[in-house]
Length: 460
Ligand code: JFZ
Image 1 (cartoon, protein in one colour):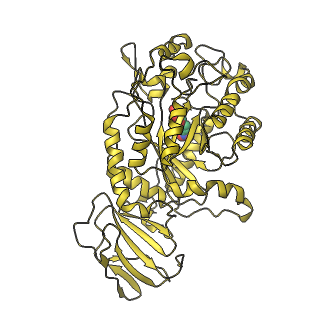
Image 2 (cartoon, rainbow, N blue to C red; image 1 turned 120 degrees about the vertical axis):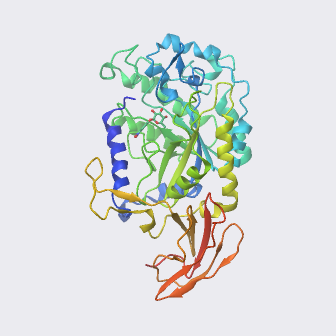
Image 3 (cartoon, rainbow, N blue to C red; image 1 turned 60 degrees about the vertical axis):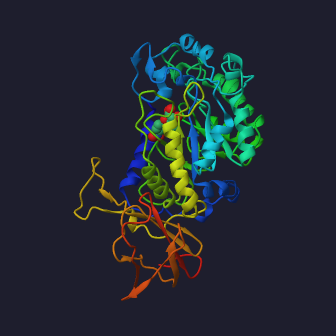
């Protein structure tokens, strides 16, 4: 996949933070914006969301004219250099009669997810909503004729699920002046990009912020050609219509939170709000040949890893062309949801670890990674999340016997299993405190032990 060089920089930044220290970067008091913090309150508590990549690319599903097209499914038009006129014909075939907004929202709910972000328009330019700004949309160009955003917004409202919209503001391969399509049109540098912004992207952002009730966030992406001035127009537009709507980190200007590179989890905790967008297999848009689903245990580890570093996990599914989310991915999500129904207290509303040594350690022998950066040896035994007066130790492997609590000055009141409330004895010896967990651990997907302490915050 070809991305502008600034993307590799963003990706490299996160890869680097992967391999450096686990310490949080302090945010200067002057950088704290109270309005932004207020907008972010729900996001910081939510922790876990469902990303949905759905569009015409679900029809070819990774194959064009009998040939496998490598890469992520939603990039097929670009990867196979499909002419606009030919790609457009997919719209006439798009009739996802099994689409059921309530079923999708029920899935997110069962999975323990607190928000949904769906591709209102991806790089192929096709909109999943009725749009006066462009006829290349699900209502005007397909036999289906139903506004998917409308139905999802109604289903989310019923279930108290927040709904946000992915919108590809820069790349639009359907438009002569949109970024990215150099197989039908002139190279980016020769385009009248502002004409495209004026006539399609800005009007459509206005539409999705006007016609579907409260919008939790707009997820902009791949800011090719986005100067600060252009990005500013989008920020102003969003703020003027729905001041509470969050802006992600890929607009081309500072957003409300940081978006990491795809599937990238930083090595240490961050103070700024952040989110990792991630695939459940290896593609965003549906590909019929990708059935390599992450296991529930992997997802639970990644979720706790992310929450223990102060972030959110936005996990993607790619529905098929008939409107059904592949059953195997649903099964995985629901199993994680069962774990969260028992252990959710360690996740929702929880903040980052007050410690950090459990995340890993720099190589003692000074080994370097492929970039010549100090190698960071990641540990995966357990993760720590926190609430006022409470620590949650989530074990993925058998804890050491006895398990010594990381040093803290606070008195410890009690410890118990989150799943069944059974108490654990805290033994004090030589200034350290420890508990012993009988083997095998209660839940191999993650066994949570709550440690209640005196005071609100850990003092080290
Ligand atoms: C973008 C899209 O091109 C892709 O189709 C998908 O929607 C994904 C969520 O986002 O791809 C990117 C964008 C940024 C990086 C990597 C892939 N990055 O910063 O590493």
